[in-house]
Length: 100
Image 1 (tube, rainbow, N blue to C red):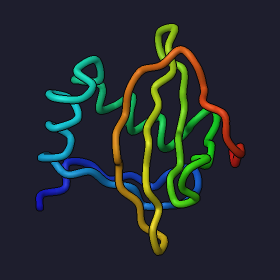
Image 2 (image 1 turned 60 degrees about the vertical axis):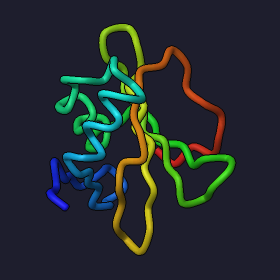
Image 3 (image 1 turned 30 degrees about the vertical axis):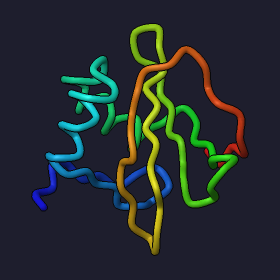
């Protein structure tokens, strides 16, 4: 699979997404995030906060404020590697254990 982008997150985890998965997110799940690749990458690299999911300890939610909303990038970390599950705009940070 072709990697669309890959960054080292603030937690020092290499996080990537494929072109196919990015297109699925931006065309079928969260159309509002289309064209926001730069903001998503910045959220992973320099978030305002990172939370651990309350449902899965391997899932992390990265948040950064952009234009009055938070970009939330949800990632799974496994064996020192990570991948984007989804990303979206939100007005509110979810509860959960804060790491960053």
